[in-house]
Length: 316
Image (cartoon, rainbow, N blue to C red; front, top):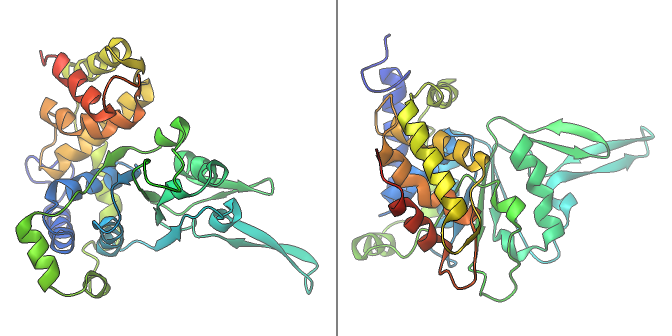
């Protein structure tokens, strides 16, 4: 079957599955259609998500809903001050009957890993995820072990001004494709949440929306979405502006630009287009760029600085 116009390399069945998947997650995470789309952007782009918000606003529900809807293996780790790297990666245990060490994999060996309240663990434990997130592998006892494919980290963090939190290092922040915040639900959505069934019960009843191989095919189609030379020039101008923008000490790297283009391709695909528009870049720029900027203390928030960078670069 030939792919329908405007959908890149997607067949109609794949497009329908993608639409059903978004509809299903939106039925579980109410009133957050934009944030749900961002989560699908990251998942289709082989990226990771950092969700910064107060407790109780649906971060864990979003992670569970995504994994169940796509049909991926899910593991959750509650990050605490006494969590050790081995609690995430796994450990080798001596088997006396075989007179050999046997590796017991940790929860990182899952397709979707929810790192809940990641900034409540000390930096040494946080760093256990660096290789996993960047290389989709972990090295333990000198042996490199591949992680499942796809491998997708959804990390949640509480605002850093809450007690018992540790700021994430820049090297780890750079591993997250997107940062987003859910915020409080709207009045109508909140009423539906209060009057409706428990989200955990609803998620337990969720059926995967993709047939065998369909989700991998959708992910592969992202790379086929066209980004014109003019669009690449626009992204490069945004990178250049970030490096000389007032209040910015360290601007965006080429890797950030690659991440932005990859995310923009996925965003275009979700909207049914086979090409990237500047609007795709603009919709994602703050989520991709803000947490990667190193700004002066008096420059305001990183989100506000990212927005001012975006406004400062015209679209030719």
